[in-house]
Image 1: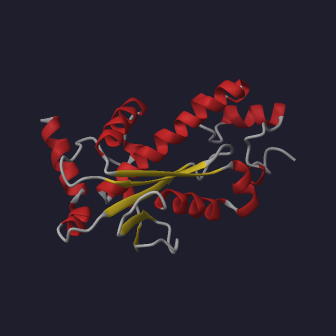
Image 2: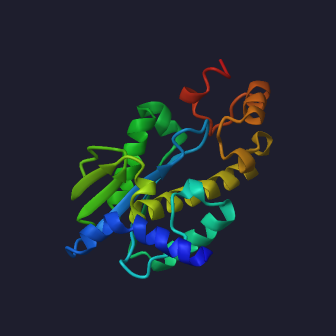
Image 3: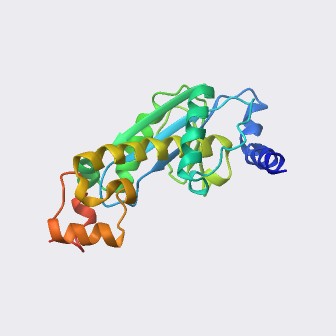
Length: 206
């Protein structure tokens, strides 16, 4: 029964994309991960999934467990027609602000994907070579955006594991850079590491 429910859910999620597939249009989904954390990069993904097969566990990345996200990420990477990933560093976020850094990462990801239509989670006016369709809560509305949300999230989480090995005091493997009480307490005691976003930590560090 659970399998049937997942398949029904993913068919519903794909209805937005199906309107473009029916026209023979190459449609991509775009999403980002990491706008809110205190450290690390923001990562954007641009993904073109085929009309079939629909992967039953593709969903908003926030609705999946870490183990499930990793599994579905591998399925997406094996199935997708195109995947582009863009990154804006903590230093770039400080220099141009988080919104512009997100836009930079999205443009970088989209440049790797020859799509005609880009379904984008919330962000507008990127200046892409194709039709841009901003969608509020797009990762819960579009199959391609949901796939992009998983790629972006898993890519960034893997970056956080690498940073945890370099800066083990901050618990990055656990908090993924977000401002948990443990993370903030460590930041106040030890000060920032090179990957902290200085524009994000003014309340916790002078």
